[in-house]
Amino acid sequence: MKIKKAVIPAAGLGTRVLPASKSIPKEMLPIVDKPAIQYIVEEAVRSGIEDILIITNRGKSAIEDHFDRSPELEERLLASGKQKIYDEVVAISKLANIHYIRQKETKGLGHAVYCAKAFVGDDPFVVLYGDDVIIGDVPATKELCDAYEEFGLGVAGVKYVPSEQIGKYCSLATKEIRKGIFAVSDMIEKPSLDQIISNYAILGRVVLPPEIFSILENTPIGAGGEIQLTDAMKVLAKTKGMIGVEYSGTRYDMGNKLGILKAIVETGLKHKEVGDDFRKYLLETAANLK
Ligand code: UTP
Image (cartoon, rainbow, N blue to C red; front, side, top):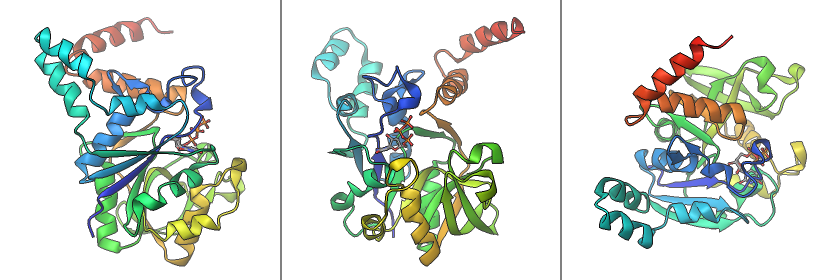
């Protein structure tokens, strides 16, 4: 079955990127000239997704404005002959059918995904974490959806994470099926060093069957006082099994300051308009570094 629906949770408080995220949603922070969430929507669209639900909350209206038409701006661009940027601006509003719902209290990623229950109905769907931008030739969402079609099980996008960092994420019990594809039978959120099951963690993308909603209804409050999506996926992994896909793109964590800097530098170097000048500037700057 082809996956056509996506959910992008973007209702977090973004405390790790304050003060930038005080009045600007962290999902709207730009990587050179495009907000993070636009990269994520474009990845979904390139993967065959047609309907996207963005989970927002208070103070996130900039996200809705970004994917809407902007008549005054468009008129001005046309009148001044800026056809290319006009086309680009209008195209953003036509990317996909984008829907919105508010998570009324910030109770965690599991709770945010639960807000998508009515939108999802009885279909499998992909969750793209709103602050994880993945850049690569093949979209990560497509790699996960392909695995869902092959195995008919929930799919987690995974990456190898060194032991000293995995405590920020989750640790998965994995058995390799073939290169980059794993059977996942268990997981633990924010493991301490002695709880690490493997160095594979879920980073930014999952495909879930609709059964996840009945599991989330019974998921107690977990790590950090929040309803954790990982706790619900753990039930799925232990009962039905899940698949892990080591996606090929590079993941940038736009929820922390170093992640934002890496995304900007690496994307800036490849940027058509400013890439060459930026490379010169970086080389000069690096030569003077001590
Ligand atoms: P994070 O774990 O990065 O949480 O959420 P956060 O609250 O935004 O960040 P910090 O820790 O305070 O800096 C991962 C994704 O899930 C969304 C976030 O918007 C982010 O895209 N999220 C998180 C929700 O939609 N609702 C929540 O209650 C929590």
